[in-house]
Image 1 (cartoon, rainbow, N blue to C red):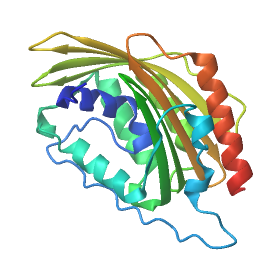
Image 2 (image 1 turned 90 degrees about the horizontal axis):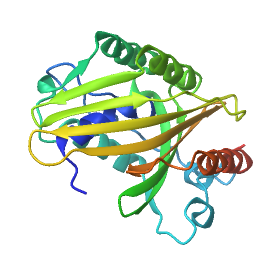
Image 3 (image 1 turned 30 degrees about the horizontal axis):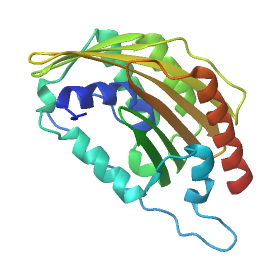
Image 4 (image 1 turned 180 degrees about the vertical axis):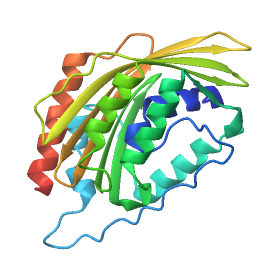
Amino acid sequence: MRRTPLLLAAASSASLLLAGCGAATSDTARPAPQVAPAAATEDAPALADGLLPADRFAPGGTVTQVTGDEFAGLLGRARGHDVDPGAVTVTPQACVDALTAARAALGDPSAVDDVAGQYTRTGFTGTAEVLTTGGPAATVVGTLTDAVAACPTATVATPMGQAVVTFGTVTTPDLGDAAAVVPVTVSVTRDQGPGTTGSALLGVVSDGDRVLGLATGGLGTAPDAAAFDALLADAAQHAADTLG
């Protein structure tokens, strides 16, 4: 599936709290965060060791790991992908206010000490896992739930068309210090070509100075919520067992 500016804007709105950014509402896009991975020592395992092993994350699938530098590059490219940020509009105003409040609560992305991630993709579906340390670890779950409560539905308009992002009921599994799971539906209407509807589940777990983010989704059928909850719990337990 070709990634269009509209889909990128919608995805940014849906995952702003995991990535530390949202659909741009000003004329100047923020620079990509500079993340310097912490050095691993014999006494401190590398953050990537806390990611689920491939046979548990995606049995029978292909798993690709992503480094901190690659994350920074991906965020930078997504912000500047083919569309003037000033031409992207988010409504209603409550959602613009929620984005602003979320950015303030999350703070400077450069405060993140280390980041590691992995993803798997099959056809039009995929799952991604990310671990970070430092930054907004203590506030990210509250920021997510506050933003969804303030903005249950947002419309993201670009010159290419528009996307309606709808957040479902937040659940709070008993994981780490705090956790939340949010269902997301994105309906895209293009000026040219057929529309697209996708569904996803976003999970965040805060544990000390570490944040675990997990997302799965794709086109058409909504993800299996029970399977996602089990994978999130497995990922959180593995990170705790491996990283402390």
